[in-house]
Amino acid sequence: MCYNPFNRLKSYLRTHALHHALAITLLTVLMFAIPLLLNATTDGNDIWGAPTQKNICQPNPDGSPGWCSAIAGDSHYCEHIVWERFLRTPYNGLSNMMFPICGLITLSTVSLHFRWMNNQTPTVDPQNHLQRFVAMNVLYSVNISLCGLGSFICHSAITYFSAQLDRAGIWMMLTPTVSMTLLRWVPMKVGETSKYFYYVWTFFWYILVPGGLSAFHLIDPTNPLATPLLYKGIPLIVGGCIILTFLRTFLGLTILLPSIKSNFLHAFLCISFAGIAYLFQKPENVDACDPESGRVYKLTHAYWHILIAVASFMHHRFCFFEVVGAGHYAERRSSGRRSEGFQMSRLSKGNAGVHGVTFEERNSLIVEEGGKTVSIRGVEVLL
Image (tube, rainbow, N blue to C red; front, side, top):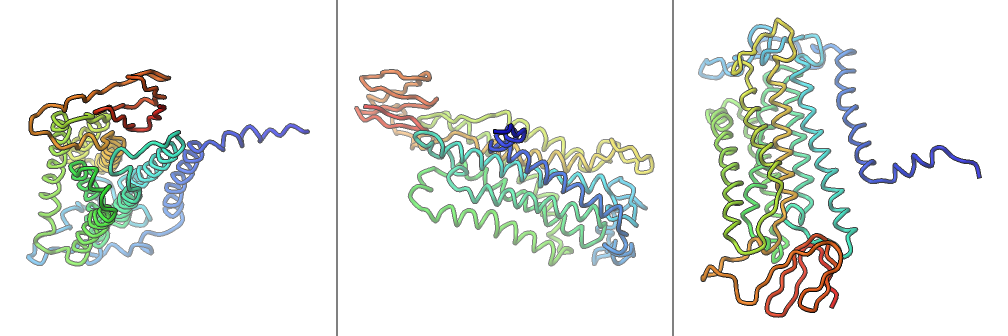
């Protein structure tokens, strides 16, 4: 038989993780290649319309500048505008590709983790709500991608309507974040007893609320509630999510067994990136507004897009890989003490004997109460 040099490559390609990496890489290349190709071959005035006062800048009904204030001469968020190009502000526009990239990585991570869970012997049970209902993770990826699309169109077109797509898209990213934060307060048993809970919760937080708020901004962008809802409501919502995230964790230490386990590096990076992103949203905040210089490193609004997308991605990872299990949400006993006969044992890998019972342990927690042994998180019990 002749040696086929491609057999080795095929064996590598059978690895699911590599499949995902290749797919994400190719899609990322396409996401950048298509806009750059359009930018080189088309006229921005033909695509987005000529930069007229009506098309580009529409003042508020009370005569205030409205969105006109975002355009200073021939610059938008301190990047020089090239009106005849498809990408009228290329750096601020292309930086939004980080949103769909994070969405793709999220889909890949979730898919690989579910595959790993199903391939264990015995299969590993879901450890939190996000692992129990995959649709929430899929819709999160879709929503964050739509957020990036709206902002990309805004910074590419520089029109009044495209600005509303940017404002409306913010809710596509924010409401799933609120959902994941609040869901950590919902006992796991709620999802176990009612299969409709996840359908209602997902429809409300991932479709109805972001869709309604986005439609509100698109239908009535001059509404006096529109701007305060964004620029005052969003910081308050994000701050509330941060407080609830850590408050849930600290309260978890007083709730009976097992204590919460999560990678707090994700939470730390999420909060850090969000804080830096908020600072960089306006280049004037860091004295970096210099559109005529052409210095790319001063285009901090592009940093805002990248960092806030990564912050949202880190928040999802923090919630998705959080090991909660049913025990974390066990009701606190009135006496404040564990019941008699309750024992916890963490076993090393391999086989170990505890009270006459042999366990094949897979880095899991064993709970034995009143002579009844149960397995948690993929432990095989051999009597």
